[in-house]
Length: 216
Image 1 (cartoon, rainbow, N blue to C red):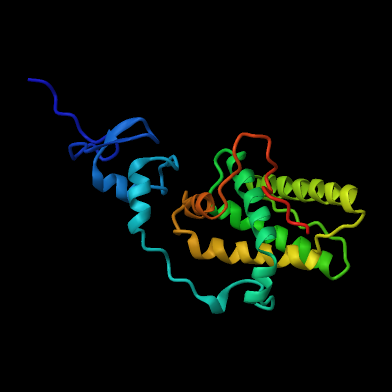
Image 2 (tube, rainbow, N blue to C red):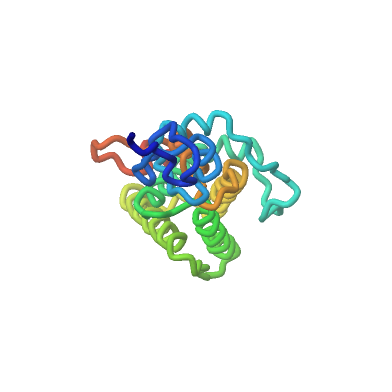
């Protein structure tokens, strides 16, 4: 009589699904408990995608958000919609190019970027660099892409059309979005996953990360 196959994680229950994170069969309870906690779940895992539809996110307290002094009005967001798409795509591409990154790393990156552009808007030059290497990689990618875009605009128009105040505002928007979308799991990537829906990356046709131009 052959030995009964058991879940690779708990070694108690019979397996019910294949886990691409460990390339082994596991039971449903272990999948639910260890998903994005001890398991580095691929974003395209069918079980992760199904769980996203029913995921209960931690309660968001708007009173405790960072940089509450920066007001994001509807008119500001409407006026800077293309800039928000541009920055969101850079954040997404930075995350995709940084193996092992999770939402908490994106939180650190956004915090550093907001601090940097907040001082720039006040007229100071100060680089806030996170000690988190994953976050630092995203920050470096973001600032390089923004600088490249500014140089392109300067060549075409003779002026730097992207204002520090507007960049700061859209970064605060993404910072608050991360707080709302993150699921609180240690290896959670719900925010990164949501960027695919909000600002899908461009196709493989040579289009820039920004997509359509944002300067009129």
